[in-house]
Image 1: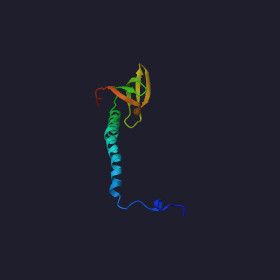
Image 2: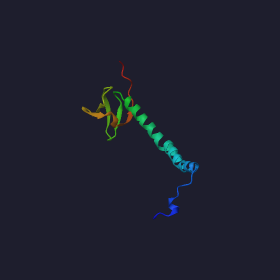
Image 3: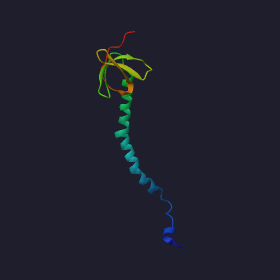
Image 4: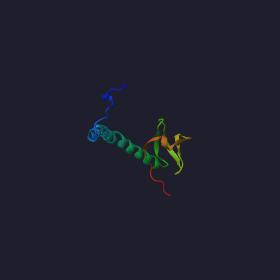
Length: 110
């Protein structure tokens, strides 16, 4: 009654190929973003986790806050390390906040 016959008709059948071609640009954008943004970020995260895992006593580290100090105590399963930032001044720093290991120490002899 109020709807004209032109609006009442549906879309033509068999439009599968056109629909797939509409998604091709989105798929290409996702692939480009994967190789340019997501994959390098995952590599950086893995490298940072490996660096944090390998922190040992005697290493000079830089925190994300810019504090430079020497690691004095490391417990393997703990979430923090003890860092000496000045002579006789020791602070606990969360492992995740270590942004760089400047100089590696020799391995501790057991």
